[in-house]
Length: 318
Image 1 (spheres, rainbow, N blue to C red):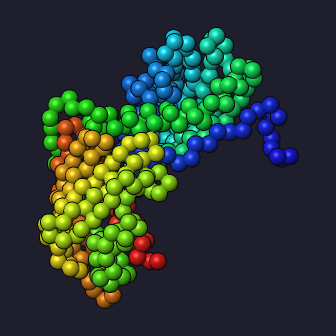
Image 2: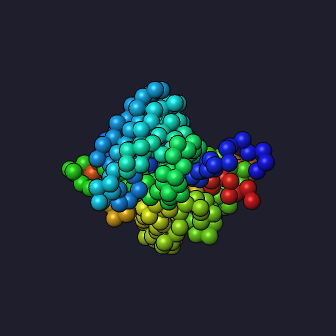
Image 3: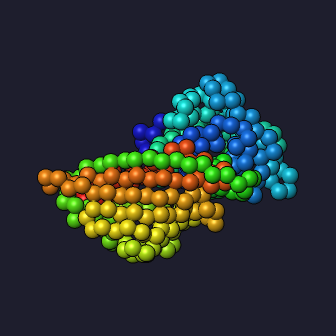
């Protein structure tokens, strides 16, 4: 601590470790940079945001009014210092107490990264005290407040994808084809695809962010598979599949539904083919999906499948 350049009365930076959101990168970035979305999440429960102004350009405003259930109001007023689309935001914020006086400044850095099944963000806040007495309680509760706010952000990302309520029935179709070649025999790749203990090593959310709730697998014609889990925010995702065609070491054909909480967001048909050659195996996946009732996939299913195929390959190296 002797080399810490901060004044002794300055609190240390707050670092919110990597948080994963089950949404495409463009959706999470939009949730940070459009006032209509910021107004739905940028406050810890049970506060609300009756006013928000967001201008995502260097020098543009970032202003949010947070209101408690009793009517107490706190403003956060700031400007964007850095804006790298879908990659990074830096906002110089100033937080005001209920009396309207400035309490502290918070340089807020947000980094966005494509994740295995969505988008990861990292948040870091560096504080400069203006009114130490007034700032103490606000900064002391910042970690908990950010946690609650990011839970609200998760819900807003779900709402933005059309999965929080049905405003009209719709279906959007999409199809993709992906290939990977692994330095492993077909039998080993087949085992990673069809044996639950082997598949659990690569299929599902990251252990630090996703907790399994229900898991079973029976990879034979007519057999079913389910992978249901709860994300850190409380969001529950469920993969529910039925197998139709199973040819050992060669082909799988199955259909599956995906749910976010109790909302069905898609129904897909997947064909998996294995081609063995010279000690290596090429895995080919073709998927046809029907995305339901306003759910905006924006290519995230294809991207997520690619990540999973890479994770499968990593599991074969052990």
